[in-house]
Image (tube, rainbow, N blue to C red; front, side, top):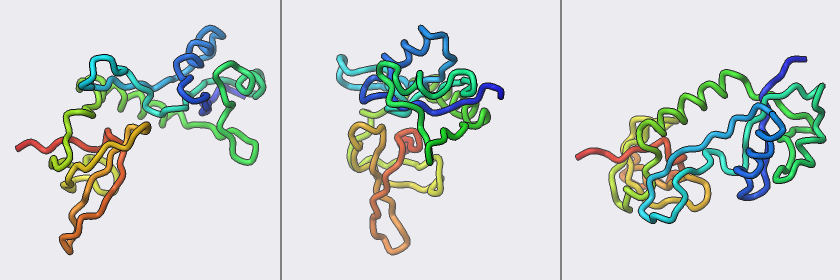
Length: 169
């Protein structure tokens, strides 16, 4: 069997530590991180795109599951009914491209948005719609926006931060 990509869970806030462990063990790893523009100069400037997860490229017939379960900082491979699903190579390529785009644009702008700012939803089922920024949702790089529907009622919608941009005046 050839090497495939698999999702690996880390213990809370141990992504960097686990990534270094995997690098030391010479395991091919993809750890998507984005630059974040913050107001607080002491805040972290680089954050995991998927907090609590990394991707490993291994042949499980050779390595087995055990090293990933017992590795310091790891909570084991993501499994369904005891089997870890393969993450398609194409999805990893799309993630790499998206992370590069975010970082090339200067990172995710989290603190430039204020409650009440007009934003454009750029991705997902509501792509192209205008909304009102409400609040950041802590810990998950998500935001809540208020979407105006036909009946003029504002409906709250939770989205990943990378799916919105501030509307230019």
